[in-house]
Image (tube, rainbow over all chains, first blue to last red):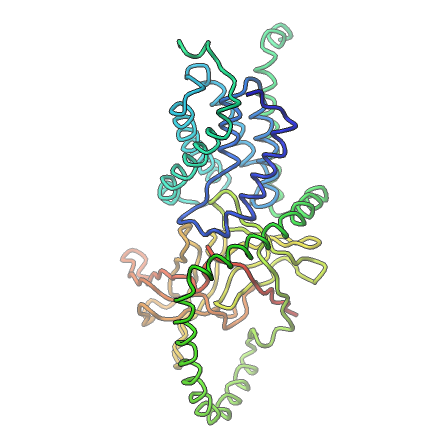
Length: 166
Length: 277
């Protein structure tokens, strides 16, 4: 799939609005899925170039402005996750559901640890235990969301034959 | 250097972006809680979009919930009718205590207590957006500076203490909930007797509050109701929650308590902002 900014920007805005205004009303157990993170991972994994990082930074800054104690934590974490996904995307078969799922789960865990680490460095007392407690639920939700995204975009997925043999 | 930049232009850009973000983070840390005018404008714009979406979702969600829980609502209705009948009888008995209440009010005035009832007015608002990180307990409400909402205004709902206003703008205010780890509340035990044990609570980052009693001899038990003490920004008498666990810390010799908040933070829609004088 050729992901274009003109399609992806409205998608990110919709994800942000869904995540902030709709998902909290559903009162899911423990936490809510991070739609922006799922989209960011999928964009960075499926699409060549820096689109995932650019949109990740933009949505992270907006998220921090609206809800964070400080501006930059989410943006920095999204950026780092996008770079990480970009670094590994050539070593996995990108058209596979399993590869996509694996990347989402690992990236979600990395994001959580990074977010916690930066928060602690910046003086927060958020506990590792709490993060570890919510992480399985976040992995579950994000995994489910990424599967939905995979099936939505699969039909338009761009093939990467060069990945198949790596 | 130039050669390296020419050969590794992409890497240099990535490192520069990371540095810019880090500088932004540090600058924001040094000026925590102060959004720029551009930031305020952005939040106002986002809030104006979030509000109708949030209201529509709440309406649909409530409709579905009501359909699915019709039987339990009918049962609850009957229970409430029974409770109402009991409360009517109780009200008659309470009228005999009016004189006692007046004496307590005089005592309260003498002690200079600022109670919720003395606060000037309330502004009601809807929760229109919640923190997306699952880390902080911050949410946005649809009332702001245009209605006199200011930083540190106390936010409550029908169940008890919700939190305080962290930042406010035109048509919006960010509220940091009482279960956030950065929030501290001075409390007292409410038992309806003369006992008045004070303590301090802080969010434990797991949806509950943790704290300790100032008096190590304080007789607190599980199930005790905790209300705000009136010390600090929170007015006296707002329900915070119930004590679920009491532990004596052998090192500090303090009685530590864990409190279940009275407010269901996972399902919060309407709030009131106390416009204190």
